[in-house]
Amino acid sequence: MNVIVAVDRNWAIGRDGDQLVYIPEDLKRFKALTTGHPVILGRKTLATFPGGRPLKGRRNLILSRNSGFSPEGAEVFSNLDALLAAASEDAFVIGGASVYAALLDRCGTAYVTKILHAFPDVDCWFPNLDARPEWHLTEEGPEMEDKGIKFRYTTYKRV
Ligand SMILES: NC(=O)c1ccc[n+]([C@@H]2O[C@H](COP(=O)([O-])OP(=O)(O)OC[C@H]3O[C@@H](n4cnc5c(N)ncnc54)[C@H](OP(=O)(O)O)[C@@H]3O)[C@@H](O)[C@H]2O)c1
Image 1 (cartoon, rainbow, N blue to C red):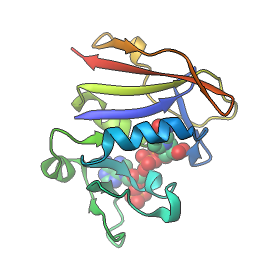
Image 2: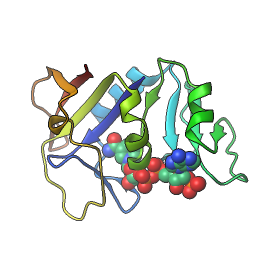
Image 3: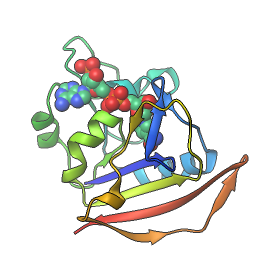
Image 4: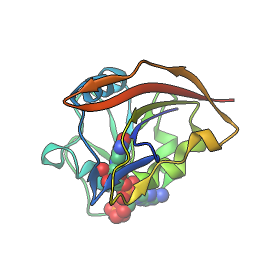
């Protein structure tokens, strides 16, 4: 499986239940990479999408322990084993923090957008892959800028 995430300089990924920043260029890349593949996400990340609706053009595999939660156009799983039995190898884990932590060790490739800022008041993080010997940085793109936000695309592989 793959994992895709946008982190700041301290590997922070969110605050107050939302993203740190939305970078239009990065959202386009996210769509291009994930369309046609299953996406795996937690119930709280689904809530951050427009209208709280699943992503189009992708199977949305949602984790939630709430048996009454059944958004249209998504498949809901109450535990990881059931979700993993339904997910194919080409799936993308798309967050949030709890789902990244639970599934990182199942992933072979991590697409990490590095936002070249340190945001204040953050409250959730992605594991620091540079501190994990099993993860190797294999690609590092040039510094880019969109609406004043500097960032770069990187890829890590688990060996
Ligand atoms: N920067 C990025 O690339 C990025 C990407 C995605 C998300 N985010 C950010 O991440 C934050 C959300 O992360 P989060 O950790 O708070 O929430 P989350 O992982 O999106 O969702 C957590 C919820 O998922 C369900 N869940 C998680 N593990 C489960 C399991 N093993 N079995 C059954 N259900 C499970 C539970 O839902 P129930 O409560 O319904 O039981 C849990 O409350 C937000 O700030 C969001 O903006 C950032």
